[in-house]
Amino acid sequence: PQRLERLLYLEGDSILADNTKNTLEVPSAGRLLVSDRSQQASSQTPPGDRVDLMGSRSRGDTLFSWTGSLLLKRDEGAVTLDQGVRMTHEDAGGGLTELESQRLVATFIETEAGVIASPAAQGSATPFAASLRTVTASGAAWMRSAGREMAGDSLAFDAANQVVTALPPPNGTVVLLDPTQGAGPVRADSLLWDLRANRVEAKGIRTIVAPR
Image 1: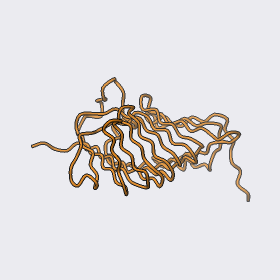
Image 2 (image 1 turned 90 degrees about the horizontal axis):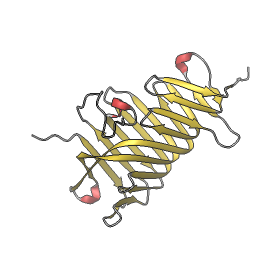
Image 3 (image 1 turned 135 degrees about the vertical axis):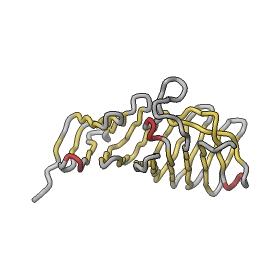
């Protein structure tokens, strides 16, 4: 018997599908669930020798929510979420990654297995599944994973290299909190988080001195 390996579930007050433009739009608050239950070995990669956003850890459940709108453009392989964006990803091993921002743009590559469904579809489903390629979160962007927290004006995920780059607002800084190192928050001009090596590189470090 066939088994469902990937599912995209979209929910909102109204869901507008344009088959001519190949788009899906939720013009109000909503949620998007991306579930990947595939049994592929962690050493495998999608077509083009590129890996998913967090390698094998991308398998699991990812829930996106927003208070503004969502626009999915399949021809461009991009989805944009606006206002009050929150992402929670639980990987196959139970690890949790959280992200918040005011705007999120994700690019993806469609795969063969999976469906996209919604309450508005009244139980019907349209073939669609995708693997994340990049994610750019902007506007008071914050991320927490593996005990570390990172915040900046924007966070950019590079799937090919499996790195997260935090950039500051004009004349500002980014912030790193790493309790595993037994130190307080650190401000810097930029941060680069290597997900493969689980290592963070900071440029222009400015240590925060707390008042006594």
